[in-house]
Every structure is written in structure tokens, then in C-alpha cells.
Length: 201
Image 1 (cartoon, rainbow, N blue to C red):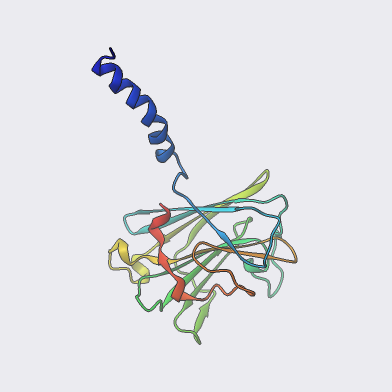
Image 2: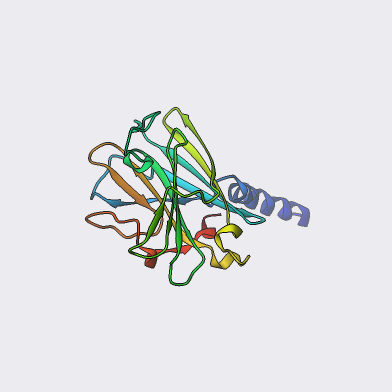
């Protein structure tokens, strides 16, 4: 006959590894899926995890890739998205406009854009992004910290919507997203596909 404490211990031994797994950093991170082209040698190369503290949204990206398409110094008329990059789009509006674009490269080069409408983009603006990036063997990591209240957030976490993106590899370049469907040609500027960002906590 098994005692009650023995049963309790058996149950605890069964659920303890599950609890540890769920509590582990990155356990609920979101994988970005391939949008275009049809195939890539990379398999689930990008994960992102998001958190909210006070009015600051933090997105932590982990990129796994056998090679790096990046330059320490960007030349004239070159932007982070011309090379490997992770991107975050954020809005608080049901319509999707305005929304804000944040990019970070493996060398922590940044680019910020306010998209007011389909026709009006304000590029090269300072939207308060604080970022870091570190190149590691087999890939790189990046962290984006964005203060939301200066962008018009009213404090309701349910209104924080957007999408996570990445562009990787040399030609043919591959385009990755959390919420975009597959496409013949990637277009990240589709606010109709924005979803709550905190689901990737």
C-alpha cells in the first residue's frame, strides 16, 4: 500500500520538470516563421520573448545562423535592413495606424520609423529605443527596450499589438515573421496582421 505522502511525492516528481520547463527563460518565446522565399536552409532561426515593466516594452531576440550578413560600418544610403536584422513593429490602435518600426543589426545599428499612414513614413526619428546586440558563435542576440507612453500608450497592455520580423542571409535573403502568412514577396508593412505582442512573454 502506497502512503498519501508517497503519492504526493510521485505526483510532484511528475509535474516538477514541467513546472521548471515552463518557468525557464525563453520557454514561451515565439518562433518566427518563414514568409519568403519558399525555402531556406535555416530552420526556426529566430526566437523572440517579450516583457512589459512599467511603461517599457522589452523584446529579446535570439538568432541562430551559420553565417552573418552584417557590416560594422554602414555606408552611405545603407540601412540595417540591407543586412541581417531583427525588427519590431508596435501600435496601440485598432486600425493599426500610426505604428512604429524598430530595427537592430548584429552590430547594434538601429533604425526607427513612425508610420502615420500607408503614404506617410517619418524615417530616422528618435522614438526612444534603447538597444544592445551581441554576436555569439552560431548567431547573435539583440534586446530592444521601448518606452511606450511617449508613443501614446494609455497603459492598457491589451492594446500593445504589432509583429516581430527578421531578415537573414545573403541572396537569396530570407524573411521571417511571427504573424505574417507565407507570400511570394515579403511585405512587413501589413498592419492587418498585427497581433497582441505580449503573447510571446
